[in-house]
Image 1 (cartoon, rainbow, N blue to C red):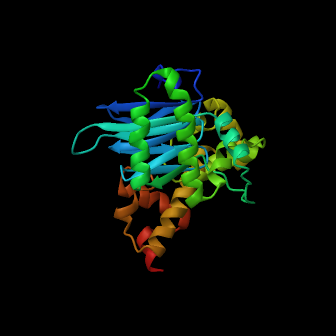
Image 2: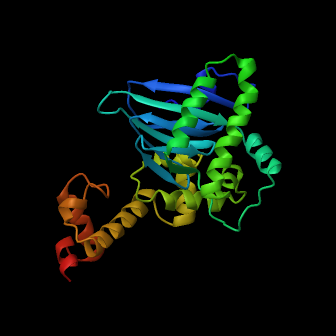
Image 3: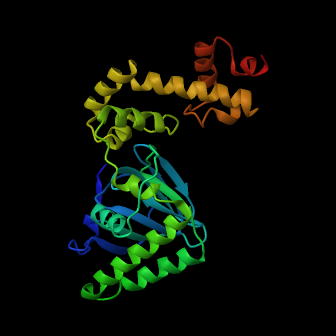
Length: 279
């Protein structure tokens, strides 16, 4: 599968640290490999969007919008049922813009050690107005756009930190030097997401062979064996705590049919799912 590099492939003015693109499509994509060279707001207008990053994932409809850190991600876009299209206003901005904003407004980080690569937010009247306003700006001449977009970037960030705090800002510029810790976090964050080894390798920015080697070094099992065990453990939790039937959950945890799930469950736990649920 071809890797899409954004915003590079959208023919935007590369000299701008902040830019806007009105994206519209009538074609769905599923787990497309995306390399974001800039941080990105996706102000979703039509359809649904799902993204997987190294340490977090989000699924939204058009009542929400996304903030995504630059880096590798898998992206799914589905068309709206009503208009049969997907539409999103993309607002790209560099790490330099974030650092400049933090310095200008003298923002101090809280003591959180949790950094995510994507955040979802609910629309309100202000954000809807903001998204429409940047779309209008994108139609102006390139010479006028720069200063106005700089001001609009400050506007959206000042608004969001008022309600959400500053941690999401620091997540955007956080670059962990501990590659082993980052790798483990990528695996553990996606253990129930039914991603393939190839997709996980991409999120980890590794070749498939390097990924498998690193995986066995850290987890002492093959990826298929480790993920199967984690999903079976999750199924046991669902059976006990959510009172779900085996037929309700086998697909959710990655099995194509019920009999394969029952057989695998029995091998791991020594009893069938129904026996486990009633014990």
